[in-house]
Image 1 (cartoon, one colour):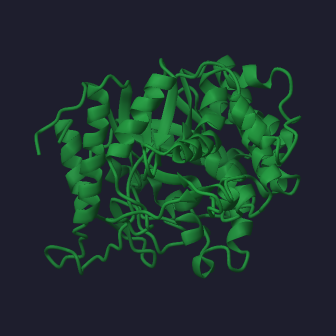
Image 2 (tube, rainbow, N blue to C red):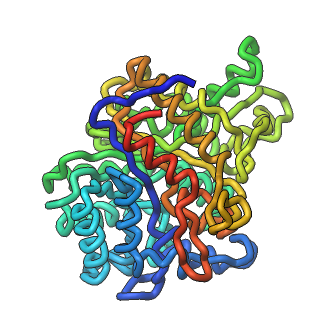
Length: 460
């Protein structure tokens, strides 16, 4: 393979999420989140695992930041736990919660690492969940208040703010098929949550802009939806339907001024979209400065009568769409590895929604790493060559997108640390740093050292 160099000032970093790494679930006034509740619901999370301790990052953040600096990271994307800031989701701010992120931001800046804040990565305060969560319009309004409180403390040192992480997951997996918190299975609730999440983004972005935030964005997990047969009209229709439910229902209101008509018509088959009030779409469509892109695998579909569809994750595809099983090689999540999908996705977004800079906010893979077994020297290291190949391929795909004119500003690997992988508990490892959950020992994998070299040379 040829050597590649990325643009000057290309931002290299890593990403994590609060519930997945922080632990300290009851420390310093933190309230319960919907994931605290969900992980304690029998049968919802692998072996009943919870985020109570996770990677204990809350107490070990200084060592983790030192490790980031050792690896040469230029940026670190982390999420703020809403239940640490407002234990009930509303009302007085908990100063101890803000103090933690204050210390974290200072530690990052002291090491020359840019903090990138995600305000919501799925850990909704349980008190708001009890009142309907994202099916309740008031949650969007409370989210803007919370965003303002976090910015008031950190805004003098944090330049880049993203409102939501993957609202597709929050809405469809949380309220559609129930595999994520809060575990509901109701298409009407899922579509209602989609809008209130976007409304929450719009309200928070307006509040952040008014407070002087420099760079404001949102992170999506858009899908590269492909037809099983490019010559099939039925497959093209299936692509259009799935693309509408996964991509355009978010991208159009954010970047094109409103919801697409075909998607609204589809939603109307489940719920009257009266929750979209006058002025909402204009608020959601206020300009953003950055679009975060999380990419892991492509999606292949076929239009087939009687197709199984995508269940609650894609309401209304049952009986019409077949989601094709992934073709190997696969990651430990059973996800298909196709770097070219990233190039296609970035290029499609740049073409259909021009003018918004993009940042790859998550990209990575889970593999069954075994320290001391795969280690090259018997010293407990992890020789994760599959992960290195995955990352190398996707970075080359990102470089190809840049060569084709895509305004891509940086790349954040998922994830810095092995962590609590939601419904999969601790059995799936995405980190470039191995975590021994019994001792909390951190061991950089071979992929971490490889990534360190990538950053140092700004290329491959």
